[in-house]
Image (cartoon, rainbow, N blue to C red; front, side, top):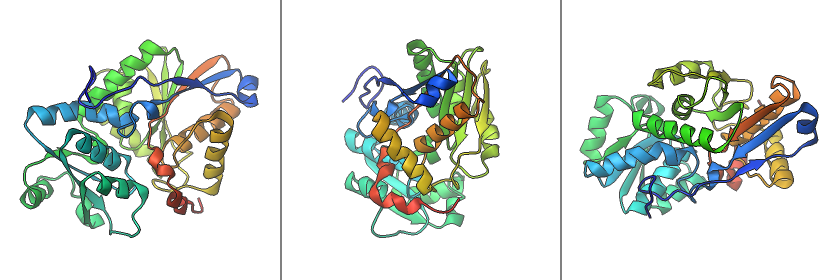
Length: 308
């Protein structure tokens, strides 16, 4: 299906206001942009990051996508879904050894026609080098390459457009979103006004380096103030705790808001803590972006729970 936004259909998502006694006491309005509902499978920020890449791949005559990611990658999931919807082939280069049974993300990828190739962590570190890509081309033939997380200039362009859409459709003072590679935040930041602020919540352990990652992807001047929050990673990427699972379960029960343990659960937990502590001042409207990734709620994902 197609529409005005790209090769894969897009549904304008709702914005949900959360209710809690502490929000009223703090004098803070908390909204959640439900981008998890913008597409059944290519959802959240992945839709925006893939938009111009898919258009470029089509213009160049490609019918195969090759990308890289970890075993729990939302990007791997989205690329498999997008390629399947377009009738293209897809190849996923996965960091680490094959483990059975497959988790829901990798099982979905296989079910949607993606060929999975597992590489060692040392080889994976070479994923963006010319030598690595040359070896992949010798093995798989012609393909359009999407980097880890789908983050490149075209992805940032799509996220910039997303940011422009956000400020047109919703009034807010502070924007909150999860950060993994920095591409989504870099794109959205360039659309924000100088009277707005953005807080990116690192899902990676020791994520202070993500500020440099975001800065390196900016292609225009940023007017808004922004920072990377590193206190709510819950042990790092693909890590979670029982406390985080209980928090997510409570939000689904109380606010009918499904979250994932990789990105959105950590972000909303952190937003709540910043409001409770008074770090977010009264009379503020906060907009959190739900970036999708709900396949991360698969039952065997509870194996992610580990001591922090």
